[in-house]
Image (cartoon, rainbow, N blue to C red; front, side):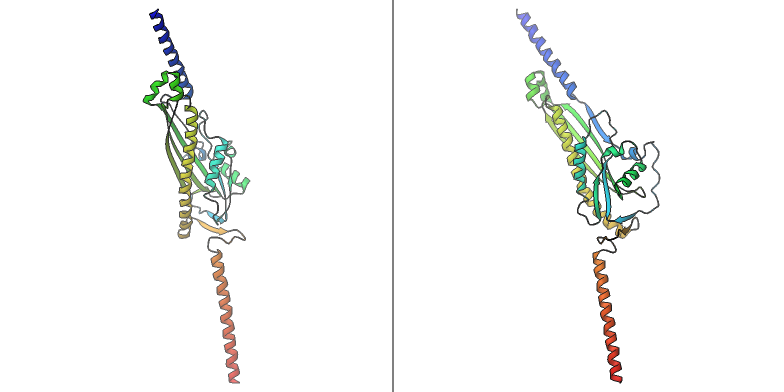
Length: 295
């Protein structure tokens, strides 16, 4: 009888262990690493060609600028990546960097479905013509998730432990990069990176949901870091084009913000015109007075 009871206990433990191992395989734990990414270079040069030297033609930015923002399509087809709703939310987050600046006319969020059918600069030019854009901001990313078990995961041998013990750990590293291109010349104007790394623990049963939350949070934090850097780079770029000849600036009809013919220049011109008219009237009155005294 005792032998039979021992056999039952061992069989039960083995059965519970097997169930736990099966759950680990289904949930993706147990020291597994996965990632999702999109490559800007692969998108712009899909045939593996070597990028050409930087073009000598100088971009002419016509203010106020019409800007498009889009994610570079992912290279990972077998790994769950960002949903369309998440992409739109993150792009709206990045859009804030351009909003409210006097040299920006409008910012358009472009779904990456417009970039999937074909690749290369020709695709960018086609999308730019469709939306009447001057500049494209392309967001690429790379995210790696490493899932492992902590020492407390030994309690996963029991069903209760799988539900209540946080023995699973997900390390998430995310890198995003926004590259700003002039559409007419295909020249890179500037770029801004963003990074994030977070660690999340969970129970075995809750590991898949915890991983999704960690990946989403890491993307948001990396995009927030990129947005701060993008704000700084926009200001540096604005100052740089005033000092060097890497970019020329012109203005659309009716635009009076930023640049050589801005509102302050117009005011100065008006003052000069007024002062010039007053000076001419002064000399005219003086000549008339001299003639009167002679006569």
